[in-house]
Image (tube, rainbow, N blue to C red; front, side):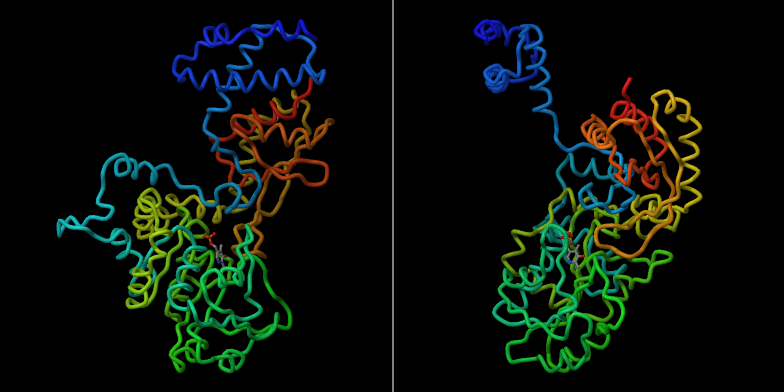
Length: 456
Ligand SMILES: *Cc1c(COP(=O)(O)O)cnc(C)c1O
């Protein structure tokens, strides 16, 4: 064992042979130290029984490269979930992103009015188009919809109470729970109705001295079906108006257009019935992560004067992408869909997806056989994802991959590649839904299958 330790090259030799001139020497040394520590531990525990100086140096070089390389990677989404929260929700089209680089790599009028030559509003660049699209009087943008909910509740109901139906006390991914957020915002939750049924009188009877707001929450990620009743905002507005309360709807994933085959009210419809409305930027809207609040001018003005906004405000990267997205929304349908990948994926027909699968097989059927994978084309269903339309299934097409070797190991290996391929494991195979797999990804898909699943 002693000889193993003595075969480890010394630090001077390592540093001179690493030849990584672009990395600050103190970091080379620090990471080499880290690597050597774990190497010595492996020797001590008997996991290593041969040491070659050149190989150690090569391993240190690889370790430094891996440790210092950017952690956020592009991946190929073969899961069939269009708005996948773990995979970055909505992707932004290259064209749209390119349009923002000039603004972002220079100074901009982020908070400067070019007309007045003085400090301006951060929201001004996008407000006019948001007003046109939503029909609301004013708008503001924050970090995400969770921040929008928090800020709205805190601005109007801190120290007071808010009425919410028991059927709408949702928890969304990452344990964002409406009752908890209310507590954090400083307001008291008044639950009304039951899990499956809430009636208008449940709301009107609950109105008390300290009631400030009625909140309607979109049950994004679940549906209550069967013997049910809930109260829509057009009816709720009669109650709030009669009692001088604010009616606020958290729409979750909002969309400006009805996507064919789905029964969901649009943002414009929702906005027309309430005083304030909030929705996410990166769900069905297909943009960057942000939360958009629209509604009555005087209410938005009050939100703007809440100190909490300073902590939740949207940054210029997000704002510049949203800015271009807003312009895209006014284009004709074909151009609009092209600019918003989430919409393009949602609108793809089963036939168009099958054509992609066929095109892939035309090129790779033989090579796949050579790497001994059993590949079958199959019909399947994609999902919208991100708590949007939880019950909707989108007819799709893809491949089921079976191997004589461990499918879990293959799945794992494909995740750890330079260009990872993420599918889903079902029964004994890996399912790859081709809805979000583009022609330009084909080579990456094959390479991932080969690198991850091929055993000579
Ligand atoms: C998704 C969602 C949120 C949170 O939105 P983020 O943009 O993820 O912060 C809040 N409320 C509802 C109903 C949602 O669906």
